[in-house]
Length: 153
Length: 133
Image (cartoon, rainbow over the protein chains, first blue to last red):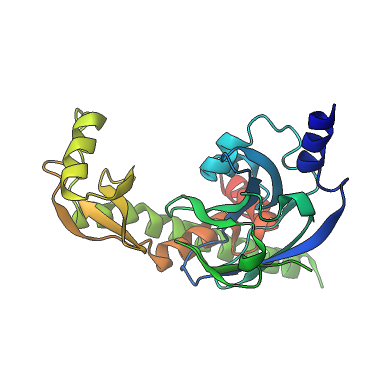
C-alpha cells in the first residue's frame, strides 16, 4: 500500500505537494515552418511518466515526434489539456508544469522531441536531467532548439 | 453598384487567386525536376537493406535516410553536435553534397496550399480550385 501511494505521488505530481516549474525553449532560425514539439518526463529507467506539453495540433503529424509517440502510446490522456499551436522558427515556447518535489534529483529527465514539415525528425532533441543544479542553466539542444532552461521556484 | 461592377470585381478577385494557385502549382511541379538534376534517383529495385549498408559505410553517424519525391536520397547525420544532411549516390553510397530544405519552395507550397492564410486559407484555396474545376 505504501509502495502504491508512493507511485501515485510520482505519477500524479499535480495531486502531490509540488512546485510550479517553468520551461523556456528558444527555437533556432532553422528556416522552415512551425515546429511540432513534445515536452515530456521520463523516469530514472527511461520510462515515460507524463506529457508536459505538445505544440502542434494536427494529430496526423504527431508520429513524427517519434520517441514521445512510442513511449506515450499507452497514455490515453497524453494530449488532455496540454496542447497548443506549433512554434515558429526563432520563437520562444514557455511551458509551466506542476512538478512534485519527489521528481527533483531522482533521475527524472525532461525530454523534447521536435519535427517540422519536410525537415528531419528530431526525437530526443534534448534530454535534461531534472536536478536542482541544472535549474536556470541553459541546456544545448540538437536541431531545432537553441537552448532549453527550466526554473524551479 | 450595379451587376456589372459585382461581376467585374468578383471575377477579378477569384481570377487573380486562381492565377496565383495555378502559377504556384506550376512552380512546385518543377521542384522534383530540380532535385533530380542535383542528385541521381534510386532505382526502383534497390533494396532498403542494400542502401542502408552502402550509406552506413560512407556516413558513419547516419540517423535517417529519406527518399525525396524525385527519388534522390538524403541522409541525415551528426558531425559531433552539428546536424548534417547530404545527398548520396544510391548506387554506391558516395556523398554528393549538402542538402538543405530550401526556403523558396517552402514559401510557394504554403502559398499554394493556404494562400499564406493558415487553415482558413486552405478552405479558400480549395473553394477556388473547385470553382475553377
